[in-house]
Image (cartoon, rainbow, N blue to C red; front, side):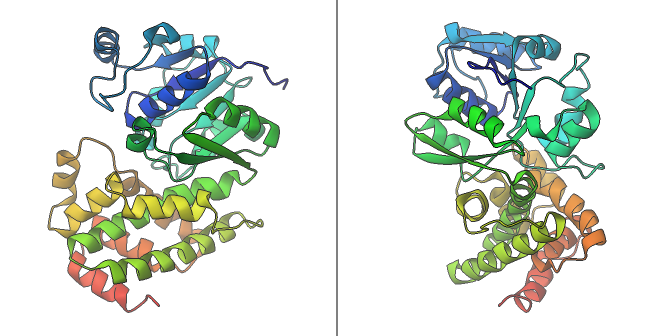
Length: 333
């Protein structure tokens, strides 16, 4: 596939992360096409020059945006398509597609698994839409949408089997508050991103149960080892698990006030049911769906994953958080 010199960019999604990505891209590119499936949201955006629901303080130059609620139209107009929707909704969103993606560069800004299929996003587009893995890029790294809105310095890693494709996409994100790097570890970065959401729920549960900073530090030290064991079993290549794409992403998700997975976990630790916590949150906690998928995938690999198992037991087996975390404390070192 011949890479475009000035790629035409498309963003799929209307949430906070999609909005943050659009903000970055408009900094360094002349134009983007932006898909949102809710036409009322598009109309409100056009009226107020900002997303009416997420990152409302970010003003957009509407002359640089073509909005559409037709995904095929976006596909026709773009060379690079960035998907930033919750993994649980991706199948539904892409069910609208009738045009081919095989000549497009697909970028995943999604940190989750496809429920039931237990596929990472790269595998989903490869299996369902015949997109070669060499044309798929995964965005990873410690980067919350809220800090992008504030233009606080952030770092992103772009992973692909083809480093030239990764570099092309990374260049479209380079701006004064975003630094980029590239990687060939598409599986490791995706699975690490999935697992860090599970760990953030664990951190939140422990916070809700009033465990302190000392314990949280031990939890995260054990968590990065758990992630390393799992990604090494699933995709055994050389990687530095201490780099920002892995450890950095874990730290920010486990500790940040902006982390929806930590917030969800905190509510569970304080006694909320799963359903009531989900109803109260305005955003999806990807780790809720991810932990079930990782648990099922690990039946094949049999990796020692005490933190993941504890979160699964609390969320799906309805075991008391107090008892489950007490048992977990005996596993950690």
